[in-house]
Image (cartoon, rainbow, N blue to C red):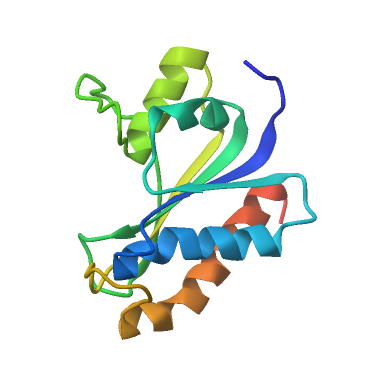
Length: 159
């Protein structure tokens, strides 16, 4: 394993062609621009979280997973801590959730980030089109602010 550690890893997923599912890529791009000069922050984004990302997770001191959510009110911005999945027997080789990535990190590398957070924005629509529903579009400034606060807290826990 490469011994380069990221103080804070932002790991986003989503599909910009499925309306509100593009929240992850939008926030990843925002974060890349916001922290482009800060080597302590690394941003990765793909259509889904895959086993290939586990090494990055194992090397991070803190990780923030970013995605849309279909199990809550549209436009609701939520954060919750993430623990390694207890039952890792049903792993997919193509798509994992945040807890499964942490469990694999622990199994394969014997390490998980000290801090793990999931930031989601409730999806109003997953139709085949670019852009966001009105309610999610209005939630993006809040989601960006919450992401910024979380990164700052992880970079300087004494604040």
